[in-house]
Amino acid sequence: MAEVHCGVVSSLTVAVVGTQAATPRSTLLSLDVAGRAFVPVAGQAVLVRRPGEAVGRPYSIACSPEQVAETGRLELLVVHDAESATALAAQPTGARLVVEGPLGAFTFPESVPERHLFFIAGGAGIAPLRAMIDHALRGGYDGQISLFYSARRRDEFAFIEEFASHAAAGRLALHQTVTRDDGMDWSGRRGRVDREHFESALHDAGDTLCFVCGPSSMVEDAVAALARMGVPAARIRTERWGR
Image (cartoon, rainbow, N blue to C red; front, side, top):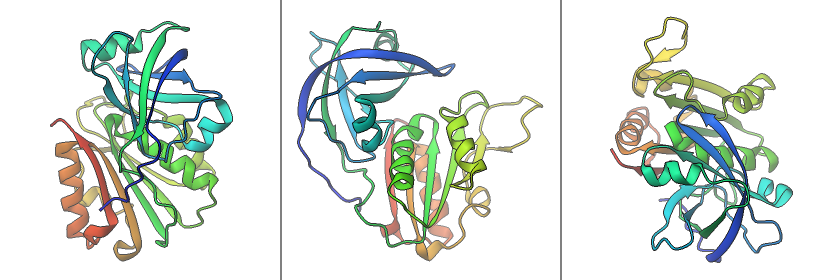
């Protein structure tokens, strides 16, 4: 079971301070929370809506608490998978949005006795894992960190330059796979996540804390593979959506 952090849930009206293409199908939306009492736990989410809308849409926070404190910005990875999401991603600088949160129990624990961290992301599921990885690195975690990242196509890996930089510096082991890309210039792994994919990334099943985030089908496949490899259920924490 994931550790539950209730925290203080607030409703804030904030301004858009930047938008940046993260992939051809997603936008990194930056919101101004400087000076606000907004302190998330790595992995949490918020509900976001435009003024006048009755219901907000959930988005995982894509930056660590340390980044929020340093920059005064809240970063959200918005995938253009619905008309409302596309409209949100198109908001101009200065536009006002209502943010409720932080929310959610898919969080990084206060202490990690395990010697290995294994993050598994599918598509936009990378957002909360990016927050967790940055938090772990800044917090001085001295165990081994591995990231297994699955995307539909080779140009749909958000934040990949950041992760590649961490990998080059020896701060994490990066593993990627694509599920739909048939381009001949992709030399990495292909196909849906399974035990074979994890064999090169999971080194000590009994001493590894796993975080899995993505579409429900991917999460189910990943959890089943981890269980077959001997990872205890208590060391597998998940967040999922849709199919």
